[in-house]
Length: 335
Ligand SMILES: NC(=O)c1ccc[n+]([C@@H]2O[C@H](COP(=O)([O-])OP(=O)(O)OC[C@H]3O[C@@H](n4cnc5c(N)ncnc54)[C@H](OP(=O)(O)O)[C@@H]3O)[C@@H](O)[C@H]2O)c1
Image 1 (cartoon, rainbow, N blue to C red):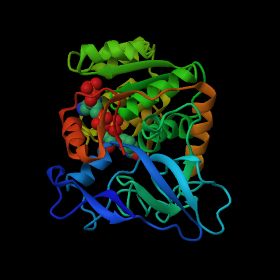
Image 2: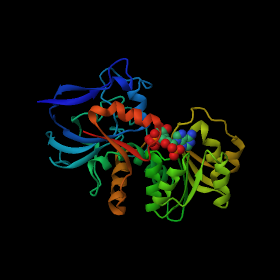
Image 3: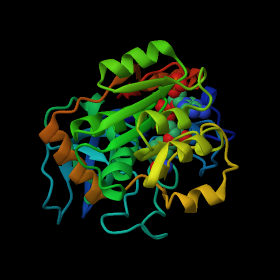
Image 4: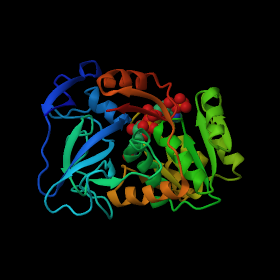
């Protein structure tokens, strides 16, 4: 049977993404055949699709997928046809701390991703979907939400009453807001747009700051929180890290997650040791962390925030929309 996929062909570029016909993959021992129903856009996918992050010719992009198991190979016991599943960002990182080997396979970069109707992949390289979510909603979780979950819960030990700072209104930050509020945390949130600040408020953010109007927003958060917040999720890198450090409390956690505002930051090193900060680089997370996150989504009923939905043949348009930076939450693609 002929099925549809998207492949990155040299020289790359989002204007060159187009649907290709391929033979439907066949299931093999130890693997499962998944019919993807949705994927979602992350900044990492943009880097791959635009050619800024070089990949092998013909690579199928997109790390995030939600779909249905249609066939299981010999020896597969954990899945059955009809099970609703999600991809995992690092298919070889099942559990424990990260290592080079566990992070060598990256879905949609070093191995084929989810911009396809069908993929045959290792049975361990999946988790269940939260029970209450549609495919489009579940497809927002494997990269952005798992990163937020790991930063706050796995590394940060988030607990009720903690204070959290999220920056901007991209998919990772909105997932962090939802996880933090579901855990009983007090959330400070920033955005460049007053309209988006209103949307953050509607989602439960407690204190709102326009980072364009208040360039010293880190100091403001420190003052409003009477000495700094417990957890900061930094997404701007060069543009935000010094303010993120200013916002954190003594002995607080700063998670380095994104570089939306540049790759090289100038920060005051004495401030970091005087404040005894825990600065942690975060690269998504493991399959076990994703399973734990799914349990938390099931228990809390969190519904991911979808800004807009596109079709698979419109993946290039979806990335053009992402480039505008006008979205709030996740951009998804239905397959
Ligand atoms: N390390 C990891 O494992 C990991 C995983 C997921 C994402 N990330 C990274 O996290 C970052 C966000 O990812 P995403 O998928 O959420 O991206 P996204 O959806 O594209 O986020 C875009 C939003 O970020 C905000 N933003 C842009 N520049 C900013 C700045 N200088 N300061 C504060 N906010 C800024 C803007 O919010 P407003 O319009 O509200 O101002 C913008 O709408 C990216 O750098 C991405 O690579 C890393």
